[in-house]
Image: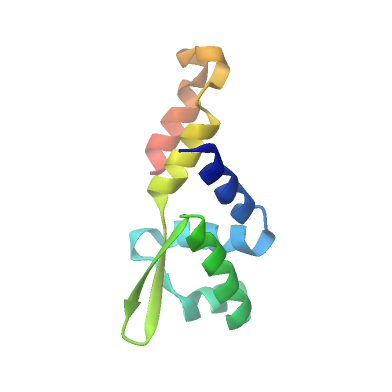
Length: 110
């Protein structure tokens, strides 16, 4: 991941509601969720949710797919893995053993 992409992703996640949206989509897994369900789960106004989903989408953290009149959103776990990899690229000064618990946790969840 390039630095500019990492900055865009971190900036997008640096907002309380966008972080809540992303975490909600992570919980839904590959099935994702339609916008109305996300709004209901997070008690969000539709226009505010739409704006925040747009920011997350532009940062590559969320993908969307039209389903009739609805749009289904999913967390883009590949982008998140790339972001975490970028953040931990030089973890522990290259001591792989010291970083193993972090990388093992990433493998289990994703």
